[in-house]
Each structure stands twice: as C-alpha cells, then as structure tokens.
Image (cartoon, rainbow, N blue to C red; front, side):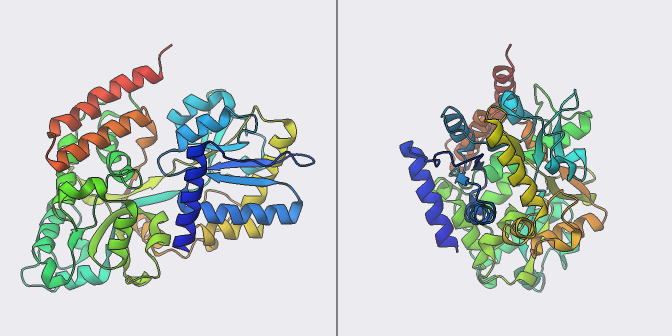
Length: 438
C-alpha cells in the first residue's frame, strides 16, 4: 500500500514538473476536477472518484499536488482552460488569495450538512467560501511499550505518562531516555526532525503554531499583522530538545525525510514522533502495535500548560470554482454531497482515509478505527484545553520557508537562533504587508 502511494505521488510530481497534468475532455454534462491537497490520501480519492463515476457516469478527475507544492500547483492549474472545479484553501490567508474563485456555498447541500459554522469560512455578508471536511489533531505520538520500559529503568524521571504534563518533566524524561538509548534498544528519544519538504512542515508550521497560539491567547487576538515573538524562547527550547535527543545528529537533518521519521517510529527505533492523527496510515502494521500508540500534548514551558491539550483544528477547506461552467459547478456540488452522505463516500472518508469529519450526516459511531483519533478524544474527555490551529493565519508560504531555513541553519550550526527570530518576527511583518498591499 505504501509503495503504491509513493509511486502515485512520484508519478504525479513528475507529471506536474513536466507541465503535463491531463484532465479528460468534457464528457456529456458536467464533470469534476479535484485538486487534492493531501498526498497521503491520493489513492483513496482516486478510488472514490472511480466509484462515483461507475455509479453516476459523471467524470471525476483527482490530481494530487506533491507535498509542499499545493499553492504553486493551484496557481498553474487555475491558469489552464481545464481548471480545477474543486480545490482547497488553508483558512483565511489562503482564502484572501482565492476569494474571487470561491462559489458561495451557503445554499449547497454539503454546507447544510455541516455541524457548525465553526467549520466554515463565513464572510461578513453571510456568504460561505469554504467548508472544512476533516478535523485533525496533532501532538507527540509515543510508543507506550517503550515508554513503559523506560519507566522501569533505574532513576527514571517519571513513573507514568500522566506525570509528563509540562515541559520541565518532558525534558528530564527525554534526556534520560537519550542517555539510556542503548539499554532501551532504540536509536533516540525522538525521530529525526527532517527538514526536507516532506517533513519540514511539522516544525515551520505545526510546531511554530505553539508560540503563535500562546501569543494570540495572551493578547486576546485571532490574527495579527505583526507577530511579537513573545514565546520564541519556548520554541527554541522544544526545538533544541527535538534535535539533540534524536535518532540522528542535528547536522544530518537536511537529508532526512518524513518517510524516515515515520519508519523510525514504526520500527520502534524512537519513542516520540511529532505528527498527527493522519500519520496512522504510515505507521500501522509494523513493529508498534495499535494498542501501544498514544499521543500527548507538545509542551513548550508555558505557565499553566499542565492543562494543555492536543492541537486540534483544520486547514483543509473545500472551495468550488465559481468560474467553472454551470454544469461543472453543479456536478461538483453533487459529488461533494454524495461524498458526505452516501455509504460509499462516508466509508471512504472515515475508514479508508481515517478522517474525523464535521458533518451531521456522519454519526459518531462511524469514527475511524484509528488509535490516534481515540487518543485525541480521550484528551478532550480529560478536560484539557485544546490548542487551536492558528497557523492558517501565517502570512505566506514564503514566511514558512524562511523560518524553516533558519531552523535548519541553526540546527546544523551554520546559523544562530537570532536568524530564526528575524525570520519569524521581521519576516511576518514583511510578508503580511506584501500579501495585503492595496
């Protein structure tokens, strides 16, 4: 399965690089062209599209952008005559770029099935530009069996996972695990923090969300044109912990990939792995049993974090291309409605793709058989305060890339932490101004 998905991703990437993304000629009536954001679900979306075509005769094409290339791919595809009829934005920032291409979904069946406007991009005039189709959670995935083995070692810094509820304890445990890695039969406490495009989003986006979240929370805001960097010392502390207690030396991170990290965790070579509920497909059916998969919050040393929960939200909003033909728009709306209401569509979303969805047509008893989703629900049930996904307010992809480059230079020893601060703070103001000029 993994090799098939990898081969598909490689094939699509090659096609996009060559500029030969082919969309079938118009069939009788409307057709659908979905530009998918999530490479890890490429195969399932293609299968679902084929099932819909078999059932209805409507042509549905799914093209998946390679990891880290969605925005550039969307720009090039939208410029073509056969443009996507269904695409995605990551939230308010992405919407600002594509708002003129977003059909108002207020009267659509898929919007009527949404549980709450919390999961929609609703404009001041009441129009609806985007609909979230998956609610995801991330944190520190951990191997319960290996962590329990550590708790049994002499001088362990904690005796149960419940004791690890703040950065100070996490740091003590992680550094002790690293010192005992040979005894525990592992390569490191953390998987490699790879900084190529298949992995760097975990740190320049998802990890960077933590200092943004706490700054927004302290200032009582939901976005800003100029981040202050109040919690960047905390960002440094957790990044240092990752790179200095891992399966590889910090100088090797430029060559490490997301696949490397998933493999290291799946094979039991590391105890901690920063990722989310979507990662289950990449780590299941290996050395780590489902019952040994847990997920804890990412602690960065903020006051009161003992009650902090996992990071939960969405950056995946469906948008329908308002510039498509009326026939293609209707075909796309019909397809979306079928995806969230039919037995085939619901099974694909929840069981095959492993999504937790915000639609009332999908009952709670149809949650995916994913132990990481179960862990996320247990975290909520415990009364912890979920960390909001504020990273969709990051001003641009250029900003993320600059922060990622600075993180890597710092890790390799070719740059100072001041470079990360500059990219984070000064870069935010510059990129925000560039994105909002005029």
